[in-house]
Image (cartoon, rainbow, N blue to C red; front, side, top):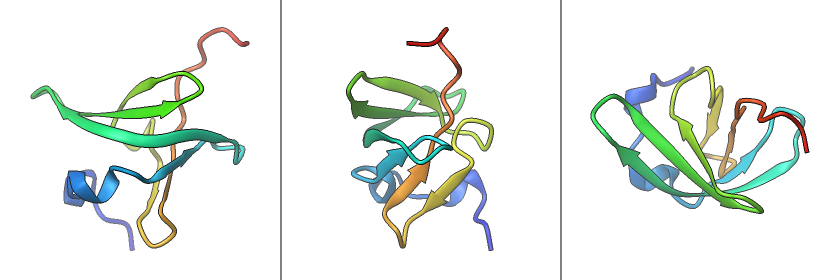
Length: 78
């Protein structure tokens, strides 16, 4: 069963490993920022990523596996 986006405690998310949909490690969730319009996940890795905490950008949160799947918008390739 999936919890809704607002059923995760920020403390549960911090420290989780973040992977892209292809399974590549992006980094770890360093912080969760709440700016009123919705939560933003800060992922610390090779380059920092700030990502809206929505199903579109974070389709999977697996607390038991200690990971999230994050799908950051394409920034034009590397």
